[in-house]
Amino acid sequence: MDLGPCPQSHLPRYKELYDAAVARGESFPQITSEHQRNIHMFITDMDRKIAANRRRLDQTPEEMEKSNAIMRDINEIGEAITAAENEMEKLGEQGQVEESLKELAKVDALKAERSEKEREFKVLQENSGASGHQKLRVCDVCGAYLSILDSDRRLADHFSGKMHLGYLRLRELLVEFEKRKQAATSHPRHDTNRRRSRSPP
Image 1 (cartoon, helix red, strand yellow):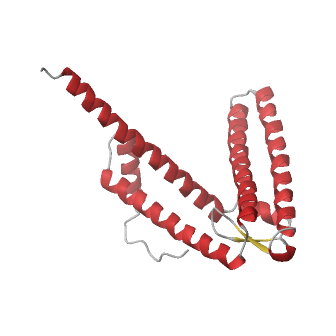
Image 2 (tube, rainbow, N blue to C red):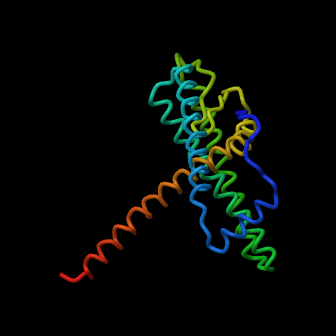
Image 3 (cartoon, helix red, strand yellow):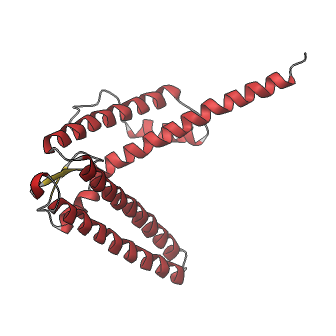
C-alpha cells in the first residue's frame, strides 16, 4: 500500500527526544491520538480489501472459518517461536547453556507444529471452494491471496513476511488501544465515586 510521502518530519534527533521524554513519564496525547487514528485507518482499509477479495473468491462461511482458524494458529505459533528464540539467545548470553538448550528444543517443536499446520492449511485449500477447484484463499490478516499451488516454504515465507507481520502488529496494537481505553474509563469513575463517598453530607 503506497501512501506517498509522509508530510511529517522524521528526523532521528526528534525520535530520540521523544523516546527520552516518554521514558521520563511524559505523555503526548495529540501524537498518541494521531497514531491511533492512522492505525485504525490502515486496518479499516485492509478489512475492506479482505472483504472484497473474499467476495471475489465466493468462499462459503464454513471454509472461511476453517481457513482463518488455521491461519490464526500459524500466527500464534510464529509469535511463540520468536519469543522462544529471544529467550534462548538471552539464556545463552547469560551462560545458562542447559536452559538455552531447552528453549532450542522448544523452538524445534514449535517449528514442527507450524509446518504441520501449514500442511493442514494447504490440504484444506486443495479440497474446498466451488466444486473443489477453488485455487485461492485470502489471508485474514493482510489480505494477500494464498494459492493452493504454493509450496510449504512459500506459505511459510508469507506468514513470516514483513507485510503480514506488519498488519498483524497493527491489529495487536488495536487490541492494546482498546484495553487502555477501557482502563482509562474505569479508573476515573472509581476515583469519582471515592471522592463522593468522602464528601461531607
